[in-house]
Length: 353
Image 1: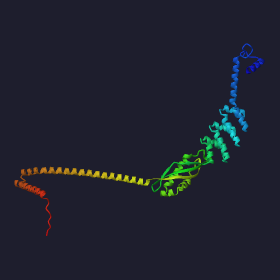
Image 2 (image 1 turned 90 degrees about the horizontal axis):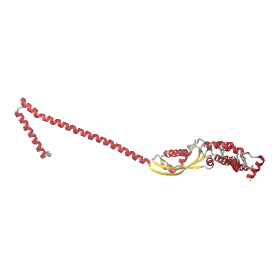
Image 3 (image 1 turned 180 degrees about the horizontal axis):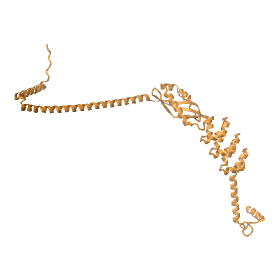
Image 4 (image 1 turned 45 degrees about the vertical axis):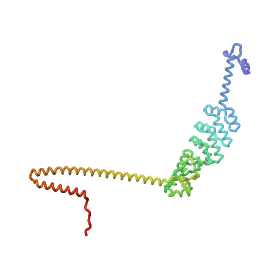
């Protein structure tokens, strides 16, 4: 049918020489080329102009011009990622310029998340502008989740936090923090980790300042009141609504353990000092023994010089033979008395009448 139509058109206008097969009609190759070109043109047309998306936008009241859709294609912006969020805005009673949505997409933002956050904030009567939502999204935060957290506060459960009271008893507490997102501080505000760290610091400070761990067990709400009064949400992206103590456990007696370890350390220090004094005493004893041995050697040396002196005195005539014999007798008598005293022992003391 297409060939017949083309043939009739060509018969009226005439054929160029390169399309004529000699009979005055289109050649088969020329006809196939025209068909291929037509198909390519149709594909390019439907790619440049998403007709179904254009019809959906028109039917929803969010009309988008065909030239605008073509311009999006040329700017490498998927029309679906811009038109569908705008349809949602129009149906929710909001309106926003296509250029702003397209600019946020080109900046690397999530257009659908921003639009969902705007719709949710509008229904919840939360003041949220597109610029604020786009800034939060580009900052890397989930703006839709933030709006949901503003409506429905989130409960954060902290890990077990351990601290020691002044009486040395260890206590472990688990808390649940109820927070609400602060839209105005989402850009540049600290996250959940900071809130958990600050609450942990407050718990450790409160337990550590308690004189007795029993007072903490009797009034665990004292911990939450003291921590909440510190204003721990300053500079964060959240507003702390409440801090509730979920569980408090009694741990080890750290004070007694520390005292025991201190006493053991003192004992080891004293033992080391005593061992040092013992070593010094032993060294002094050995030194005295060495000095005694030295004195004994000198005595032996001096005694060895006595016979030599006596011989010299005999030769010089300063000592007579009888004097020498008397000395020998006295020495022998002394040795005999010593031997007798060793055998008989010391004389017993008798009572005098």
